[in-house]
Length: 293
Ligand code: RIB
Image 1 (cartoon, rainbow, N blue to C red):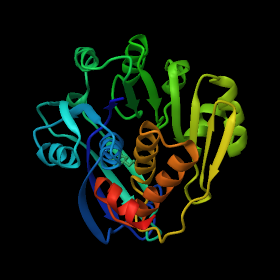
Image 2 (cartoon, rainbow, N blue to C red):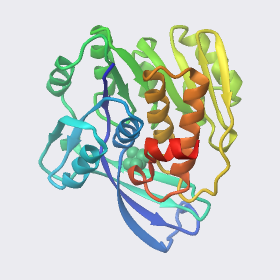
Image 3 (cartoon, rainbow, N blue to C red):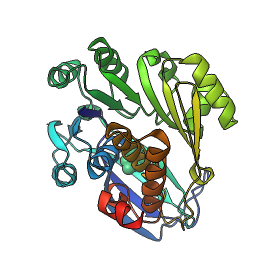
Image 4 (spheres, helix red, strand yellow):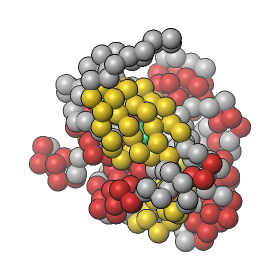
């Protein structure tokens, strides 16, 4: 099974701050870095590093060489990354001393994939393949609808949450990968097990992975539930921890791992990502994971 990841590609401007800025406050940042990121790019890189065959579909601007190179050097097929005029999508990320972050994403109109892009992308894939989506890229529900019509496996990470998301054709999703904020947005519940109850009821044909940061992760699939505790690490930067988890979990399932083993590997990979700065740069290789196991 090949995975096509229809996802964002961002330049992350990361600022180390004493605390996350409050409304009306002006704050001096201690340090600034530029990293390759985007939930889409991070997940493609995590998938490729974990050994999956992944093709990334998205858009970069004139300054996108560094982003394309990050994807290529991790082993991601970039034939469906279109180059557009203007600047690539970017983010402003604050990281506090505990490694917590907050993120603003700005994409710009030129970085929007069109319906023609989607049709071109899907021509290269078959019902045996899967499409992975986050909620950062324009036309995500259209891609979901067209990929479902083609009979592909739909995997959705509903991040960042939006009100429109509830109107997407979510009944076609085979796997949801979400955190507690996204789970609450889809279900209205704040207790993780109640979220799972609600998701199982609303989407009986879907499997779910619910990540809870330091509190571990749950999976629910075909009437069974699994829990994986988080690995203890000193958090330096939590950016892309969820993306690392997603990539490693899906690569594990795709290579035939059972859900508990895929969860464990994904949680371990995410714990390494949390202990390092940056987004894509923080994602460990499969060799690093195997050495430590
Ligand atoms: O999930 C982390 C990512 O979210 C960052 O790399 C940033 O670009 C935003 O898309």
